[in-house]
Image 1 (spheres, rainbow, N blue to C red):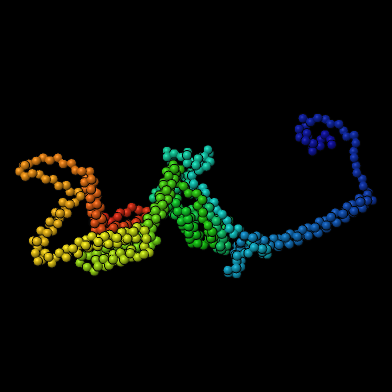
Image 2: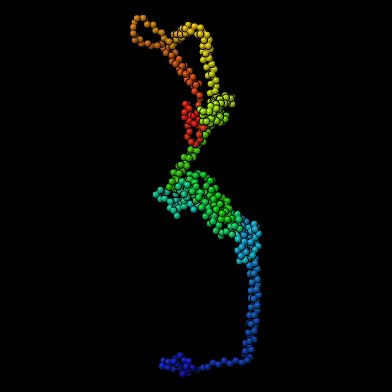
Length: 481
């Protein structure tokens, strides 16, 4: 390179260039034809090895491509497991004869994706809706009882945070749901919806059904009727799924928990306990009524109650303008009387009938004898009534004066007005008391014989509600004439 070489960058500015030393050596390459041939000869083995390697790689690539093709063709073979179902699609269209599109468990050979696809999913699933209508518990409230103890009416349910339901009577309630469903028609499911979101579809249908069911039931009905709410939810949700042609079938709907709002849960539990006690008392009352009825008429009391109910029905239809209705009631009453006299009737009814018969014999022995005596005196009275009356009066005076309870005092004539203090003897006073007691006893028996014995009729025995009995005068009660 010379100093005046135009290629020198410093040549553009001679003022800034520096002088350089001259070159001390020059290199020159000289090659002959023999040398080129030698190089080529040395390169031939390398070229041959490269060609062989390229051929081997090409063969391997061919085998790999063939393997991929085979794997691609066999990728359409899929196995449907037990408890699963599904369909086959070709370019998105369901494949199969009508009614035979659903797959059965086992190996399913088919076109590979994306030409064909085997859609398989579980036939039965469980959807948990425990938090949809349930309150959000605080961190320190683990159990339901702890949450109830910490509840306060000053902290109401928070919409959007706490789940709840509105019942028919305007109250609030919390419930938990567990739903089990199955795929009844996979073809309908794949055609109508995104089958991967079938859980969300069931969840929405059950939620809507639960809201509608709660709106038709009171809080007490929702809490106490164990099977009805779940049945109503299942029917409503299934009807909605059928209208949407989802192909899903609800197997069961369970409500494991249902409570009133926490702030009033204790009061509701007290009411429920009172209701259970009332049911127990009603059952005891039924047993007591059965015992009393057995004691009243024996094992045949049911037949007697039916006859009394029929008699009461006839009494309620008695019309003064239609004497046949009164006759029908009297005939039914006579039939009841005859039935009570049958030997298969026991209890108090049988004892009352026995006492009535005994009293009838007593009346026959007393009043009957008096009636026969008066009948024997009738001819004498017709012939000479004054003499018969005087004779009877004297006999009555004799009986009175000779009675052990009668005391006779003699007062001299002409003594005028006297104040006499009399003290009877002890034996006479005792005889008077005994006579008074006997008189009252006979009077009570006479009154009891005149008044018909009253017993509760079938319509006066009421279960689960208040009732009243027919009064003796027949003006008040269920069976007044």
